[in-house]
Image (cartoon, rainbow, N blue to C red; front, side):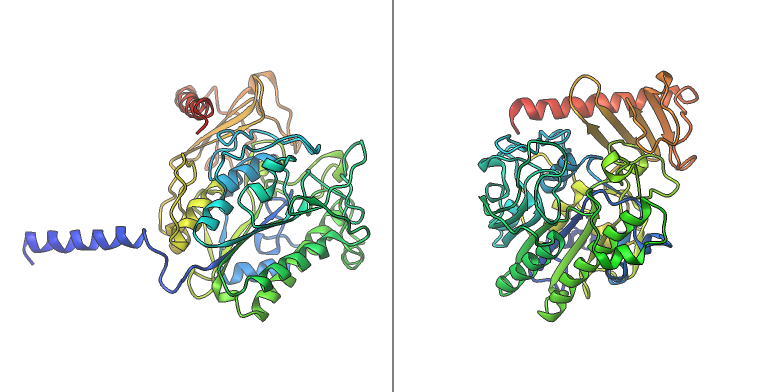
Length: 459
């Protein structure tokens, strides 16, 4: 073959590759999409992630018929911010939610100017539903029915008692259960079971047309209220692991009930299911100072060490996406919006997106991560926690260690880690590699300027 013929063939091949990225995957005709977002579930807390004291057969089965990620990162290490990042495909700070939103009725949250996955899917003809926790605003314009969801059922604040459905944190006492923006009462009904009812009813009602559901479970977030079956099962484990595990197995069983309903409706092969935790496990007093596990990783909920942001994650679409495979590539929760659009053949919102499609990563273990660098920004004020990642390098600013594995000293306010050298992040390498600190600090300044410009322009 001469040079020109070879060039022509390569150009045609390249064109077909580019074209394939712009259309849905073969065999998929507008699949349904369900995002399952658990709450405060630790990095290693599934059987398929190596836990030897947790029974999670339904999520393990989901992993066996899908792709499991070993290096998936949450958009943030705190509830509201992580949800804002997931739903908008943007850094939470760019979406105007760098930390937690108030759980008080009448207090706004994420601006309705933001474009959510639900709005993107609804514009493409999908029926959209929110079931479970919201925690992104408690005013009519910032509640789910005004953020792209055709149907919404659940609680608007950060946490509730699973039986009384009252806010579980501090006073004044307030009841928090809503359907489509209207206050409702189901006193005594176990919230975990009610979520399954709502999920299955929504699926049944909308089985004839494509649907998108954001199922934001409130488990295993405190209060740790696993059902009696699982509390008995784990009774010989020490506390708080016994209480935590009971709630994880409770959520696994309820997810299994929904997956079984999909099977019964003949929708399993037509539905992409994405499972992910919003961030790492909690070590707060209300969860008995622990229970979850990040394995070897330092950190937990509320901090940007690996244990706070490296999360379990699975995606499944049988017959279309690979099955029983694992991916090592770096990916993040803000990538799901563009990935869903890519797989479903949907036009992206006309917004600045920080997420990038990981479709090719899902399809191939040899594909490169779409991210060379990434940025986390947790909290407002003058001294937020932040991290810049470049390859295996992570530069922390104002770090906190909620796992209390080691004290943070004054000299650690810039903390440099390299995950290939030390995945536990126990040693500060800043003094040893000052040139890396300087380079990543400059990257952080560029990210921060970009976010501040977006906020100033309202875009």
